Length: 149
Ligand code: DQA
Image (tube, rainbow, N blue to C red; front, side, top):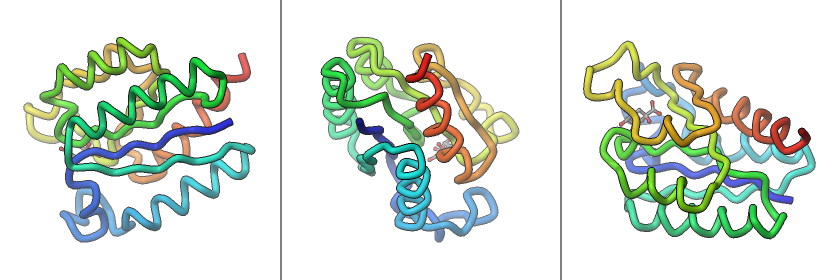
């Protein structure tokens, strides 16, 4: 069984982009942390990042199909700034019924007002914000627990 971790635009810059906000962990170190957590839980990790909305939509469709086939438990998703703009990502998750835990590294609620609204939260199983890259590990664990009940 697998678990997806999907990252949206600009998360390839993790570690160098505004470290005071997003920390100093790079995307490749984040992938390692996620891989460790998945392995601990006996899950195969599929880890992707893209700056393109359509690419993210395709991965959501793929993940949704794999969940329906009993081959995956869902996706941890940090949509980056598409969180605040993308009805298409909302519809992709809603349409595939993909179990998603939304993750934001920073606490979006203590930042600019334009980061306070999420198109993803209403169709996510849960949301983790402001706990840094640790949020990904917690989200993988949460999806695993959900898959057991
Ligand atoms: C983010 C928060 C978003 O507002 C921002 O556009 C990002 C990263 C986070 O992980 O804190 O790109 O999703």
